[in-house]
Length: 73
Image (cartoon, rainbow, N blue to C red; front, top):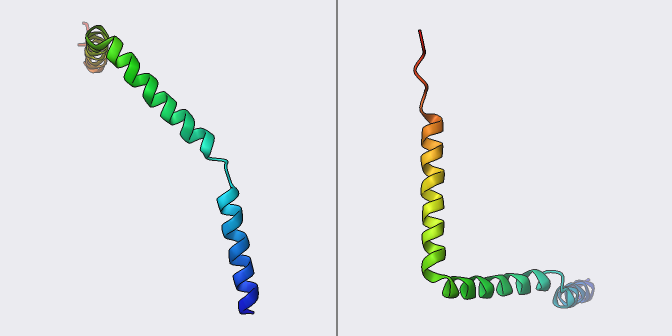
């Protein structure tokens, strides 16, 4: 009984060690972070300003959309 448990645990550990399904996702995440760093380094000022302006415009539009229109008589 103990031998069967040992063999099953060894087989489970072996299959876990050989499983490479998540490796590609991790590689793509690392590549994405590196590309983001390069883009931010190249477009440091203009990109940050453009994103800041865009977020302010979106915030203003959302605020104005939530403001109720007074009823007309």
